[in-house]
Length: 272
Ligand SMILES: NC(=O)c1ccc[n+]([C@@H]2O[C@H](COP(=O)([O-])OP(=O)(O)OC[C@H]3O[C@@H](n4cnc5c(N)ncnc54)[C@H](OP(=O)(O)O)[C@@H]3O)[C@@H](O)[C@H]2O)c1
Image 1 (cartoon, protein in one colour):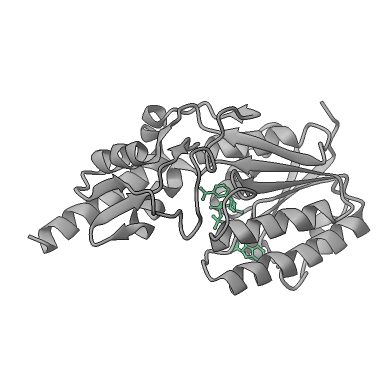
Image 2: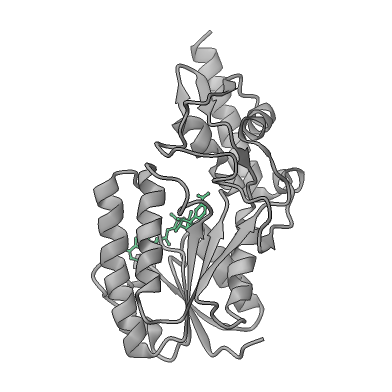
């Protein structure tokens, strides 16, 4: 275990970031949540030097909710330039970046392409680092279902999928802060692996959603060509503890599945 003085969580108000902040704070670590909500703007640099003063570790969970390639690349490039200039100035000795499993294997998905560019900036930053490549979160299942629906059918590539709970992602990031940088990427996956379509069917069943799910050799993952193991590793460096059943019992899942259920019922009523 490495001694840490202070950790700054970029995107500390977000879904993952807020869980990382809580995990570190409850372990007695001095932690600062940095986002526009706390007057830190990683696009302009406002408040970054102040947030980083006295810190040795940065965990970057920031994000832009967008699928436009130019917007994504501009966000990660501009923020990366500001973040690493501030980190070099502050003498940060461990930058931990949350990335996605498959960014180096899936081409054509604008979000994955932008995250790979973000990884490249981390590698070129001269700041010691660890990249955590996580599989997709359970919490992302509703977005996958809605984003990949065409004419009430969800078409998925012939691939395996191994989602993980946001809480497990946050715990893994918080634990990494206590270790030395590996200057490389490590993978995190969920405890279960199955066919992508089977996962979506499982999720829709829970939410009472009647949409059809099919495996289609021509289907992409939000524009990205996917091979069998492109978005879920056969073996991972870290494994989440929450199975889908266990996650379903959490308040985070209840909120998502209830909203989704309400939406499904309304849609079914509207469609007769
Ligand atoms: N979805 C998945 O299945 C999946 C899988 C693997 C990895 N990931 C990665 O997980 C990460 C976190 O996702 P999330 O769902 O937790 O994101 P999120 O809830 O949307 O949080 C994004 C955070 O970024 C902050 N932010 C945005 N613009 C900012 C700016 N200009 N300056 C400072 N802070 C800014 C937001 O805070 P303010 O609005 O207060 O500024 C917020 O705290 C992402 O990097 C994503 O790539 C996601």
